[in-house]
Length: 222
Image (cartoon, rainbow, N blue to C red; front, top):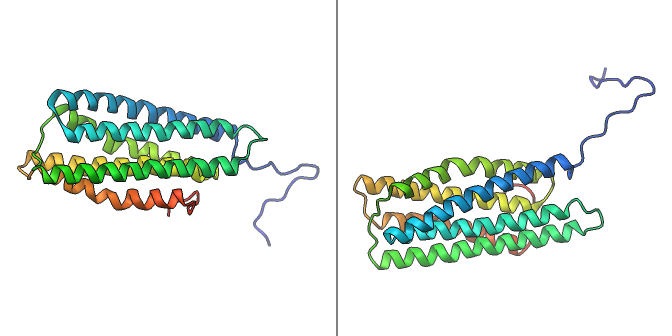
């Protein structure tokens, strides 16, 4: 005998919520709003501290926040179009994914240039309490926002929004490597540890960037 529940006569089954339901879109708006608060708050403080102490690493942190914030802005623009039934959502989603791919490639290019310049110029360990706090927050705070953005984008069946969520997760991983280098510096690790560790992110940035620009992605982590 089937274990499926029987419907009472005259009663229809409740419809499943649509993938693009208003509740899901509202959740994504909130998550993107938290992203804006995070990246512009940390980006502004990182830029201030970079200028104050002359830190290239913190300047890179601030510019990475700008790129991440730009990606979130594009995601908000796309999300607003999802409520328009006459909009070509598939095309809009594809365009968003490609623009996020471009931002991944910008991250790859900047991280590569910064790493090479610092390694060639003899980087030294930098000690900044504010920079350390910002990096800790980015490492342990943003992954949760990125994860829930990815979950919501999966429910919305949007590879463009999923791409933006993965960029947040990737930037958090980059922050974790920066934190590792900073902690190593406090223990006497050489100054080149930070740029060397940051270069480990370049293959990931390139992979995601090229895949999204070429349109070879889906709304799931690959």
